Image (cartoon, rainbow, N blue to C red; front, side, top):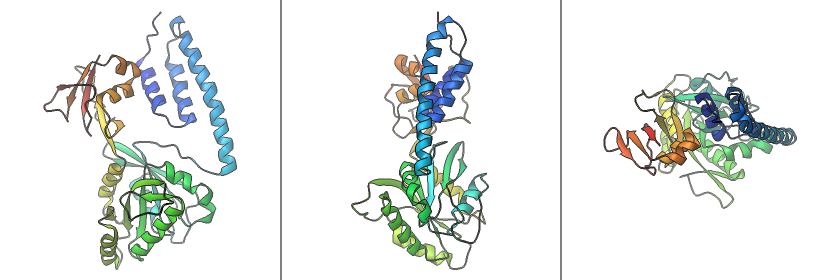
Length: 326
């Protein structure tokens, strides 16, 4: 008897395949069970899903026990990717996250306000980027788990205060990163101890304060030919749109849209894929059966003309619309 699985099932399965933690996988599997038709044709599949849930539940319990012993060590990624903000005390990280997300973070003019990672989702066009505001990188209480968060992030924003020796702040923050064996791609030559190279940019905050313009020029002169350096004011709102785009570009992802023949494309819900992904990769992202039976696709965007027929190995570009044919 055929399973006759629903579109809701396949959507939940898609989330299961892209999940990165046991808890996320469990939630997706439970949804797959809830929307699955109940008949003899699905009995085997239901048993398989229950087995997976039981196994993942044990993994989640083990991970939670480890977290209690070793402190915070993993932040599940959400949206198009995870970007961590690092810097010295009082450089304006929390104010920046509050300005570009809907998160309500404590902002104060005394050091070490942030005691634990604070999360917020920043919107860039139709994509969401997860921002993680970390405690000051010199906070000794955070050191046991700081490294694991840095190493698992997709990218880093190195935040400095333009009104208070930003070159010195950048130097000190880079040195602290190296203690965690983390470096920024394209930056100065790092020590042999660095094992984790992350894409990142230097963000100069408080560009509305006296002296910030000349300090920003010094910062650009020091690092501008090695790594992107930008200037913003979270309080005034200047430079924030450029920051959103820069953060998205750091993630090295593309937004791809799928459509069924004869139907309109939902441009509000892109599929987020790594740069270099192919039509075949997108087919698997929709459902594994699409990849198995995929013959070709029609593409709007990176093709030579609208609706061009392309092969499975066609590399997708940001904004492409594809119509899969099996």
